[in-house]
Image (tube, rainbow, N blue to C red; front, side, top):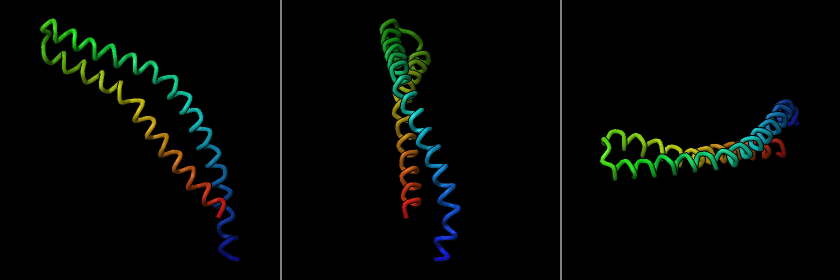
Length: 100
């Protein structure tokens, strides 16, 4: 009985935090969906540019920079998706605590 009384304020805080995390996840998912289009286009531009630079015998350091930037833009949406997944995991844990 005393444990339920002790948990009650923590459950109230967890409920507010869970709502905030769900709102953050919603906004992040929308932003990720919209920005993935742009980042994939940028990745294509930089990677095709590095191929064109390789064909034109550009300096190797410039080719490595364009490849690195292209790979970054290609991987950025996947990293953001992974972070949103971790945010979802935290929200599920909080909802489990609230329901217990």
